[in-house]
Length: 134
Figure 1 (cartoon, rainbow, N blue to C red):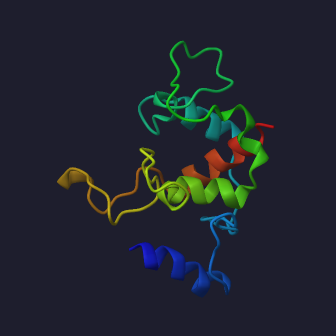
Figure 2 (cartoon, rainbow, N blue to C red; figure 1 turned 180 degrees about the horizontal axis):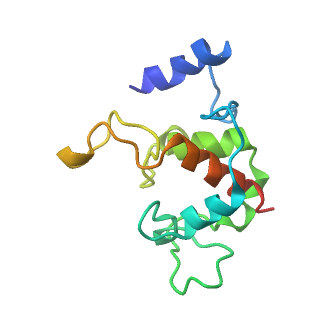
């Protein structure tokens, strides 16, 4: 599977991706909506980002401290943010962050096999929001 994730961009974009390069093209072909992205990040039923991360969410009483604060996430390019959501283990093999857009190589209940945690549109919305955090 790991090889597929590294080889697939070669076929899609004409080159393999380095660790810092990211995924340059939108998963949907369009930019995401940062307002929807913020709602997804703060939503404790969907992405569960605030279980581990903290950030600029004053309305959220409890935020995580296991992962980096999201306040400066915008220092990364959209391509780098997208790659970290799609396959965080590519950047840190010991990460506990789940892959939000991979279906293979994940341990999930049978009802969730073959399904992504977030849709391609939701990934793009989160990328659009995180890009604003500079």
